[in-house]
Amino acid sequence: MLLSVDRDSAVPLWKQICARVAQLVDDGSLRPGSRLPPSRSLADKVGVNRSTVYRAYQELWAQGYLDSRPGSYSVVRGRLRPPAASEDARSLIDWSQVSTPGAARAHQALEPGPRRSAPPDGLLDFASLAADPALSPVDELRRALRQVLANGGRRLMDYGDPAGYPPLRETIARRMRTHGVKVAADQILITNGAQHAIDLVLRLVLHPKADLALESPTYAAAIPLFKLHGARLQPLPMGPEGADLDALRTLLVRRPPALVYSVPNFHNPTGITTGQVHRERLLSLCEDHRVPLLEDGFEEEMKYFGKAVLPIKSMDTGGVVIYVGTFSKVVFSGLRVGWIAADRDCIRRLCAISRYTHLSGNTLTQAALQCFCESGGYEWHLRRLHRIYRRRMQTLLDGLDAHLPRRLVHWTRPAGGYTLWLHLKHWTADQEAGIVERLKQHDVAVSAGRDYFPVSPDGAYIRISIAKVDEPAIESGCRKLAQVLKRAAEV
Ligand SMILES: Cc1ncc(COP(=O)(O)O)c(C=O)c1O
Image (cartoon, rainbow, N blue to C red):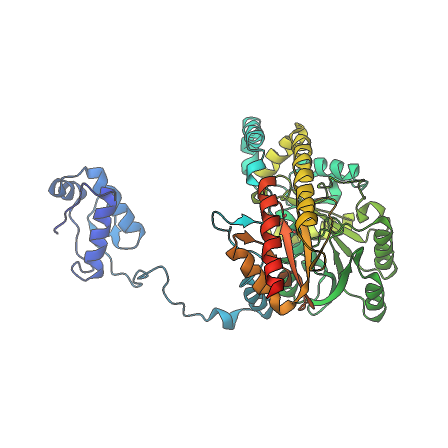
């Protein structure tokens, strides 16, 4: 067997030997049953260390090219299955045929969808709604991680409690009580983010083809998830005060949905926060008709203008509200820690589903997060975010006031959070994509409004997020926005 290695190559010597032997087997030069030279003699011939050949043989054995018994020769094995020729070999399964209807719809909704990759450098990112990595409490989290690993880290390496790391459940329950929600730790289920929490709730209550009432527009990534579960979506138009509750009442009387989904604070995408009266009415309607209300409090803590409005869950004496929270928008989204606060029986049932679908969450992360919260780091970080985003949002509002003509555009005035909603009054729904594209050509990325509607909207809209843009960028973005819209209106 002739073998040579390239000592100048970046590829390790054992890998080179392995690849060469595999090639000789694949092209038939080495036939099944042929003996390979003992590792010592091949090493002498090639001029490498014996352990290098040994490692190459081990790899070849792992890949199914060799049979080897201790103390005996390595023998070439007749591989029944040839190795895949390339990474994108064609599948024998037609995945579009085997996909369930819900999965097929989710796939369709993916392209073009709300989840895009990060905009290229130089593009002003008014699209992304994820906590700004520039503001991440990296040092504090590093300290927390080090601390929990030092204090009994080995216990955190096992599967954890399916309901979540108990001290974090306690911390979240306490935090919720500061928002007026009277819950104990056993009424909290920790999830891998709010999206996972919504999925669990859907698994619990949504029978195939059941109706689901939701605000329109709404959180874009919830729409394909609802459809994946086979829900029939019943849109409730959003007005300046929140969802149309007369439409909800009619729906509840005619054919009660299995679930009502609402984002009462800093609604995604409009930024609207509903008032106390709206909240009371929404809760009463759900109570009267015994329909669970899924309250998505994804940015509950991001109120930085005016007085706080308590979550609907804080008035829930009848246990109809399933509250969902997350650390994604305040700490960072890659953390994947969210939670559900609900009636005990509901939590137990959700916990059973969660246990079968993901066994347990990431205990180490949850323990570090709990340490971060308990050390006061979370509270400090939150106050800092409020200061920063109060300024950012004010800059955006001032910029729009200064540059955008109201005859062309109407916009919301959020009391917190990251997003603001523009109604492009002068344009039709069909023209919306053109405006988004023009803005992109001027290096401004925004989210197209149509992604947020369960059914095609009547008008043209865009969502602006200030999550990842600082004040100078917001000012320049407002000017560019105005420039593009004014020009487009002249055409
Ligand atoms: C309204 C709303 N709910 C839930 C989520 C999902 O959050 P998480 O990252 O915790 O899954 C998002 C994410 O943007 C959202 O906007």
